[in-house]
Image (cartoon, rainbow, N blue to C red; front, top):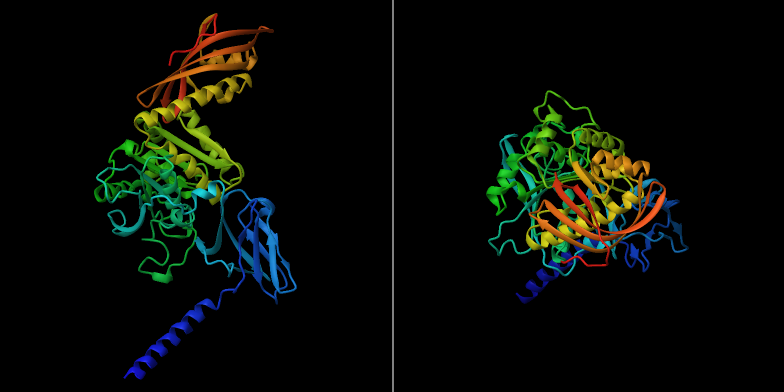
Length: 526
């Protein structure tokens, strides 16, 4: 009996080893790739003794991400990049025109229908995309009943550390994917759980939930997660049913209602944000315009816009957009944040959309970054956007004080450089400017700066005090020595300058700037 049991155990062990050997056999034993070197360079290696040409293709900027690998006498190809900035990178090998993953790297992810190997260079943004020794939130995949589509649909929810053990209510960021993405994209490619865990641990953002729905109306969930199973293969969203028919934007409130009922949320406009990349930015733009009472914070990351595509004007979500933007402006919001790369293919349509918003005097914050339509930018935008959300109480006031102080400092430089377009965006349409010689309005102040009637050549700031009133009003006092050119005469005087700021649609506007002459070096009482 003992012999039989031992034989059975031996057979099981042999079988297990066989399967293990089968699965391990595809790995290139004893070969390490990639290697992140000191100084930020990365070395790639591939054993391919019969290959004629091998290149590595990644999403870093230098050489368009391409690197020609060199074959050694042992049949191992290698390539070392120049110094890479701290980030998460996707890459693959091209072996005799056949694209493949790095067989020595077990870490990969899907972007639309392609798989890529992954690596992280630390020492900057990459630290936020890494798992660190901090408290971790939870990620759930949840099905919700859709009245709009008469089926169940899938979404992904991040809850912050401590959610399960508290009774607190949390604000919610609704984060939307781009074309070809799904409810998994922001988790895998966007590294949202890692970003949120690390930012929360460092006290840079308020603890918040992140809801990542599936924005493809014709599909219930990500490829492989629907009843079609592996029959549904990943494609760009424009090839799926119901693309750009406005139904998703029009019915988005059903997702909000489901989340508010299922989780402990701050079920109010001030407790909600919506943001997205590319197609998700287009969705965020239209969702917030069609539901002006739902979101106090809007983020558009490299967004599609009404200027970038032909819209079916018979669809309710796309009708009367100027009136909807005007109503959204009138109802107010705390932040409308737009970011795009300088070489993004949507850059020019974005500029057309900005002109449309400017014509409506629709307030927004605009950020330009380098490069184009890439995940590196979108992850970075998350690092910039989320710290601006849901700030409350004394911490929120401290952040406002820093923001206003920096804005005032920048204003002096813009005035010195005669950047009238930038100043026109900063100055409120009803702003007043009180000088020793008189008081005038925005248009005259801009004209004076443009023509150089008064050239604010240099302002040395000696002391600053800021008082925050509520979360949308701030008064700044700064004592300065101003070097100015007035009617071709260079003069230097000391002033206490009072600046009154009001937040309009999430953007700070200067309502009043008053110069008071002083004769001594007194300090402002804080």
